Structures are given as C-alpha cells and as structure tokens.
Picture (cartoon, rainbow, N blue to C red):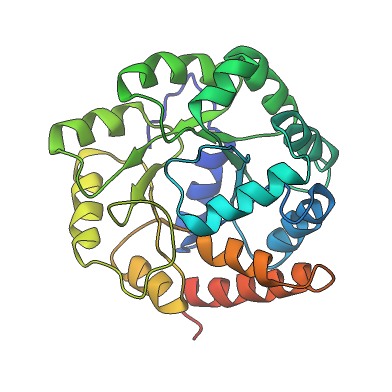
Length: 275
C-alpha cells in the first residue's frame, strides 16, 4: 500500500490492513441502490454487514451502464423506475452513518458525477461516510487529476485493470489507484460465469510485482468455488456483483433481505475456507 507518514490511512486501507493481519480475504458484495426500492436497500446493506461483508460496493443506477451486463442493467432500470437518484443514494448512506461501519464504495459513471459537479458530489458523499469511488468510464489520462481532487474529501478513487490491459498501462493504473486495484477477471461486461480463467492468477502476480496495493478480483464471480480459487491465487479481496443482484431481482420483497444475508454468509464461509 502507498503509505506516507504524513497522510492518514483511508478507511479502505485500514480495512485491508486489518484483514491482512488476520489472514482473511476481503469479501465485497455489490448491490444496486434502489432495487427493489431505497428502503430495502437500507435493510440489505445492514444485513450484508451482519453476515460478514468487509466492504460493500453500492451502484448508483444509470440509464447507459456500459460496463454492466444484462443482470445489473435490469436492476439499474428497476431502480430508476422506483425513483432512485444519486442524491437519494447519498441521503440513504447519510441515514445509516451510525449503523453501517464497514467501508462503502460507490460505483457510478462519469456523466452523472460531472452533471452533479465533482466537488459537490464528493463533499456530500464524504459527509455521508463514503470511503471509495469507482468510475469505470473515467479516462485513465484524467485519473490523476480526479484522484487528487477526490482524495481531499478522504475518498479513494479505485481504478480497474482488465485482462487486455497492456503492462505499461497497468503500471500507470497501479500508480493512480487508491485503496486497492480492481482486477476485472474477464473481458467484457459484468455477469455470472460458470468458470474462471486461469490467466487471472498471472494477472494477480503481475500486479503484486508492480504495486504493494491490495488486489481485489471482480466480474463473473458467482460461486463458493470461484471465491476459493481467487483466494488460492493470492488476491486480497473478492467482489461479487451479478450473483447478488440476480438474487435480489428474483426474491420476493418480503424475503429478499434474509435470502441475501444467507447468500452472503455462504460466500463468507467460502472466503474463510469453511466449505
């Protein structure tokens, strides 16, 4: 990790250091805010924390989600129809500040942030307790400038590395990401996969050679076996998105919180090698 004596650790840095001392894999569920509605999102966030999530990635719904597969696109569409907006998501997190203690990372696209105003967005997000920000369509050439601005609000800008990323670009990304490096395990959009490509192991090794930041693997992870494989390959964290989002979409609204909690517990057990 990039640690300076003059710069305090971010909440995300602290969490990964804590987990490293305990030799634990960071479990990071992704859910879409507002699906099925903003009140249920509040309940789901607290249930994920209760059932062993170490960090949570929370999506802000957007009408043109280029990096997302059909499952998350459908979830975003439902959330938008339920009236979910960026400000409502931030207000939700503000209301949970005294209850939700694990780091929350917002996943959003470049256009909504610019429309909102970057500094205004970051100021409100910071006051709501947001620890990190992922903007998948942010040009790398803009990342350094944006990261500097975002950091002044004690928020980490987290960048993505794909299997097709050239080595020199991978080095640039590792220099500009904060909190951790998000390693995309597959080429293409998000979604559940039956298998995981073994080349992910080589990518983890490469990233660990060029940076001491933690590496979290996401996209396509949907089973306990995937989680254990990522752990065996030496990743510091695992991000599970579509598998959670699909279950939320398929659940009866009255049962969704407990069913998501059960699935999170299953993934926690896998991360802890208890299956």
